[in-house]
Amino acid sequence: LESSCDGHRLSDQTFHLVHLVCCTPFSTMSSAGGQRPPANRMTLQTFKGRLGGAQKGFRLLKKKRDALKARFQALLKDIVDAKLQVGSGLKDAAFSLAKAHWANSGDDITSTVVERAKRPSVLCKLVAENVAGVSIPVFKMSHDPTKDASAQTLGVAHGGAVINACRETYFKAVTQLVRLASLQTAFKTLDEEIKMTSRRVNALEYVLIPRIEDTIAYITQEMDEQSREEFFRVKKVVEKKKAKLAREKDEAEKVAAASGKPTVEAIDAPSMFDDKKDSDLIF
Image (tube, rainbow, N blue to C red; front, top):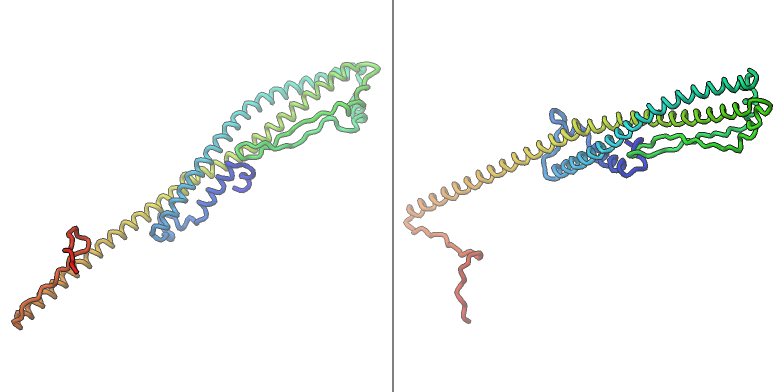
């Protein structure tokens, strides 16, 4: 996650959400086997938070994958057009080179051009373009015409115009080659990133989120079972207390009947929550 989530808000959110969700091992969330988490409200709230983070991270990663696929499809069309242009450009360049040799009385001008090429006039610089958090390498070509001064005098005696036309044709071909190299590099980078993002999306959708949902269902079921057990236990305790009071009352009546003493009823004290008011006291 760290390799593809540098310097972009969308990818940073995705990284933090997925990291938050994945901080618990899968063994504690497995549906069959493994250690079950404790069934209490705190654990339930924790897993609900992880479920929300996993779902949000899934949506963000899915949007990222869709954006990368859209750019990928656009690159396919550009690569096809660039390859056709490069093919025709190189063919024209080879033909113009043959014409330059013919204009120079059939002599090979390659050695003369290499001798005069002291400094490169065409430079290629690598820059990064950000697409949905992915750094795509792009080649930028820069041309300095002042460094071509030594080649301007080539073919002064004869064939100079043809040689200059050959140089212009090759310059166009080099420009198309740099553009094709940039597109091919971006194509390969996007392909790897789409595969990686698709694996993460599938892992969240089919592995992590179902396990968290299964764990939440297990905790909810266990808490419901605990509440039913508690209700049944309280009910049994109340019944036993009532039975004990009834036995004690029967025993007291039997003892009073045997001794001939009247049974003293318990005083029914008024409740303070009743609406009935007490009589006023006069001092």
